[in-house]
Length: 585
Image (cartoon, one colour):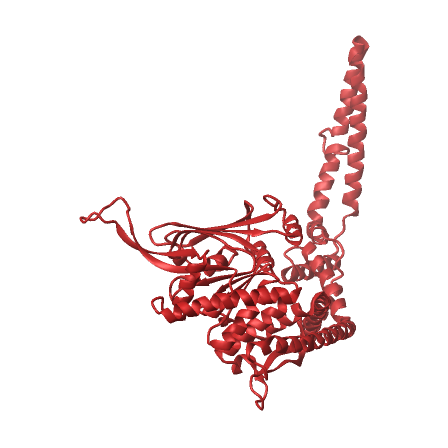
């Protein structure tokens, strides 16, 4: 229940504080007095869309604060959002709006905690529902009608709709995978040709060692320079071990050095360890001489092998140019291509498996949709009966109403297109409500619809914005009775021009506009400040004030007949409320 509303610098409101009560709260006033501004402020504080126009001219900041009474369900939800109650009974929602030259900024807090739009949307659903005649557009939207019917159907219907959402997600995922595989399969032949050619080419190249090219290049260099290598190895052998000239070899010099060192050691044994080093050097030189001599003797010119090596080098370089830039990259490409070819070769089996999965998922989706449709048809029949019962007291005794459910392909919301069908007069065919109902009939239908929802899980406050447009007389009295009936179960805020409805109020407010002189510190020459228009709201807390307002609504405050009519309305409303309470007992 909305207990308190504080508004600062919102549109034409400079500063306003309203205390609402339980039951039926009515806002009246002349056309253009600013009644809608109060509802706009409530919508804004609960996260509704705003523009810079809501900021009062001459100010830079707007503030709207609403205090709601809490309950166990609301307290539990706030606890899930990690928001504490202020005093275990209240929820205070505050929205601050400011504008700059380029954009508009808005911040919302719940009990002092900064919250985002998602949290505000969730909280709004639990606190307030606003109904206006303009909702006739929503009545014509299958998605909104479907939402209403599912909520009316209760928890079992909502849970089944969640099951449909899950089943549709599984089907959609499998269907997408199948379509992707089919797309791949359409390109499969072309890819198979390309990959088969590449695998054959790379397989024929016998790629195995990443450094094969370097090894072949070394072998080619060796085969190309056999004579030079033989000559060089023979020279080394001569220098080390056996010279054809009279010059001593390295072996000879080491032998002479060993002899000289032996003579020295006879006189100084300190140098004896050097003998071992010289002898090791002699052995190393002899081994090098032996190996280099063997290397030179084994070198042979092999033109055929040289041609094979050069041919292999040309082949590897061709592979590298196509699949490189290195032989390692070419080998990696070969491995990937083999895997891709294997996957493509198995694509027909994969498509068959995916088709089976899609068929199974579609079957589950259809079953879930069929069960949801069954629940919707059952809820639709109940809603039809209840709507007709609610409309009959609203001077629509012969009305026909039907929840039309037509099968459509399965979606995430089910397999139903739902339309409210309506015929207000006997003998007329049922037609879509949004195309058939007049303004007054639409007002009464929306009121009846909300009356149905007020008996299930509805928010604590219901707001009706000129729901009585297009009606008068007996119909207006019926609407008043229906609003009072709803207000016995939850708080109702109603903007109305009908004195019959206003008379039924438990709490009555008059909205008006005033022109004031606002002193900004810069007085005009005549000593007066700047003139501004402001909205004022007055609580009509005594019978005399209410009588005057009802007379004004009925036809003018100066007319004695209007005053008498207002008095009779108040007496009638009081007796009617007492009679309703007595009948409940």
